[in-house]
Length: 182
Image (cartoon, rainbow, N blue to C red; front, side, top):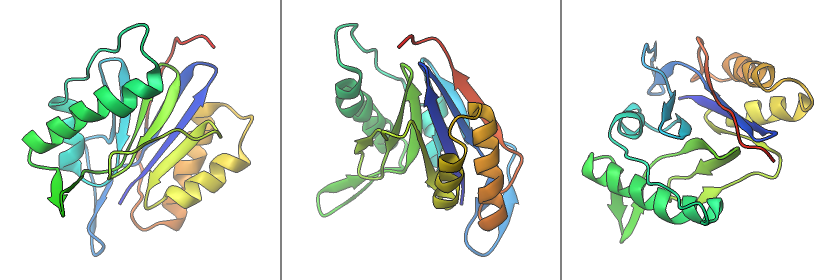
């Protein structure tokens, strides 16, 4: 299920997502969105609506000290609080002494991050990223639309993913975060 697409450009971040919920055999278009704001962050999730609900309504983002490196903050304080939230909310899993959660994109401080199921934090040099079953189609679309407006790139990538993936469906939603000067 899902396609989440993000673009970071000139200190601004946009994240868009679809509305499908599927289990491999059936699909529903849901009213609740997969892309949302939480404090100074925008997020878009795949993996589970429960995980997304926890990130949107239970997660309390930590505050980064002004002198702290953004990437180091994401890898430590941010992920530690995500882990705690998912554990308390009953979503995190533990097998062989390894915790796992889900996959989601995060926009923060003009940058786009991808949090993987093992809680690693990635940041693409391309300035765009995607996750979910439509990820590869969306990434190809994003590659081919470099130079276009971010909202247009995201809508095109989501439309391409919906065309070629059974787990991606409109309507699409986009959130933006503006204001970090580079």
